[in-house]
Length: 323
Image (cartoon, rainbow, N blue to C red; front, side, top):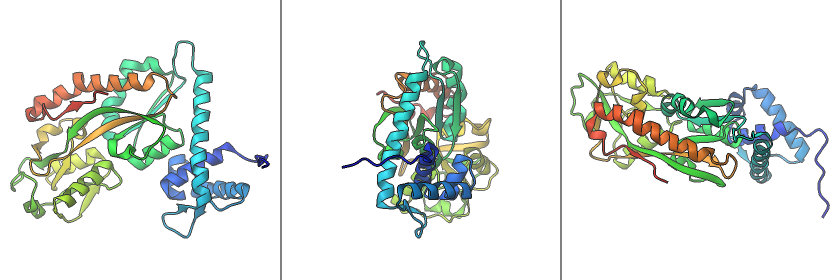
């Protein structure tokens, strides 16, 4: 069987745009992630389809979905991008083992807490650092297109990812937060429908986990307002606009917020999140292991003690990963 020749006008960038569009399910959203215009993404995809000679997306569906040819190309494109990244790291890594660059994506609740502390402790790992925050769809797109070398996310978000290394960072419970003058019983139950539930967006892991747990408990609350930002979410509750469900690490990054809220454990229907670091297999050498160990030390030495000082009942509920 003869091998197909790569067309002379083929551009590697087209594969990155294709993978991002497939992950986002939208050319408009892919354009935002990549810093391009929607028409620019559309033109690149159209050019790639012309090069392949097949349609890669079924544009009659919303969100757009991959054709069978597109599914095959996606798998191969991710592998190609990964191999190229590996080759680049090996070719440019200095004799000292310092990486040329390190790109880490994580939720806002961790980027503000771990990001500056990680760099302060281990800036020697890479010549250039980029720490970005965002919701899971953006994190996943960055990882798949190699705009991120590592992601830290809720463990369930990584279940379908292959050829990756996983490291448990920490586990924390979800908690209830109320304004200081909240009049209703401060426990999770149907009576809270008499007040507004300040929600996290379903684009966030926290939002999806919370809604899934409320559904399991058969608790329904009207939808009136939601936030992507953990700071906006906590402040809205502190202003007396309603109550919320969040995590201790989300609260920790908001200055003075523990004095502005009442924080209570969830007794009936308790649940939590397990945060995991994900890296591509055998790409970054020992860096992922070093970084996850530093994250655990930061939490143990600098973060958990402050939280427990304010909320002693959390001491046994905040745990570090041990893999």
